[in-house]
Image (cartoon, rainbow, N blue to C red):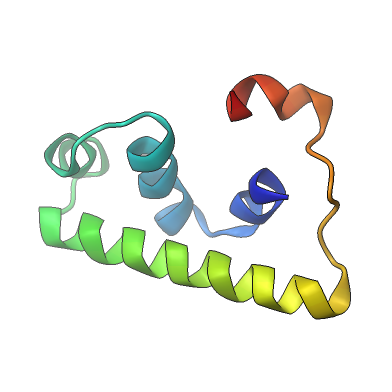
Length: 78
């Protein structure tokens, strides 16, 4: 469900989220990669997490996300 939700985020928010939470990169390195200030990285991470929370809250009522992660993405989830 998480990867399905992450894929719905705009790249502006998805990329910093994946780089920080999945790849473990520090804010400074993400800022260099994206060509943005560190403060922008922090705000995009915050907004990405907020949007994911909203998506999950909405999905509880609408059942919009599958409860299974596609097998092609299992290696990413590990």
